[in-house]
Image 1 (cartoon, rainbow, N blue to C red):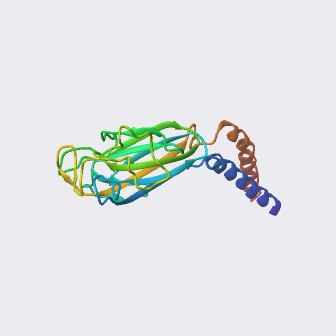
Image 2: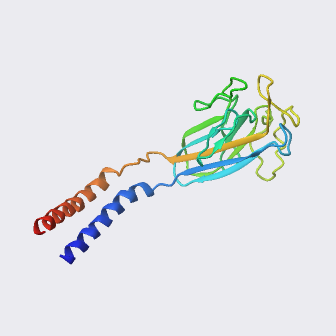
Image 3: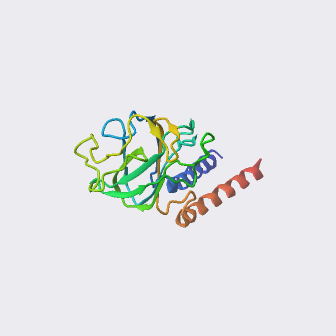
Length: 221
């Protein structure tokens, strides 16, 4: 009887390993960065720079929740009132991969004070493995048209040359703050939340054995 119990326990562990292993084979990213810009444009205090790495081709989604407010990837909540953002995605050499401007987000909340949905949103459905950089700026603080990309050798961001000063205004002239909440998420392309068919084939014999031993054990009681 003790042997049967041990066998049942071992098969249960095997089944759990198969189920969880299928989900843990691929990594994902889910990060939220919050803070306050001190300047609408210029090279100091006007640019947020973050980086991340992908181990395989992934769907990358980057968005803000600070203009109209909302729930971040951390599960925390950000209040409305932040600046109208511009998000740019670069590869490991600083070359622009994708840019969001002017602001538009299919998941943005409406700012009650302006009636506008101006949070930023950028998505790359199949970004190759590698290192990436993200910049977040006010919508007016765009990169120079002569710029070829992000200069990774300096953190002064001379290529951003927007016309603004220390105050923040959206496209309608509404006064905003320098607050931001930047969310970056990724999921490997083809990742599923359920085990692959091959995993199920390995799992069926183990589950069948567990059911049979359990039935016999009840019959002997």
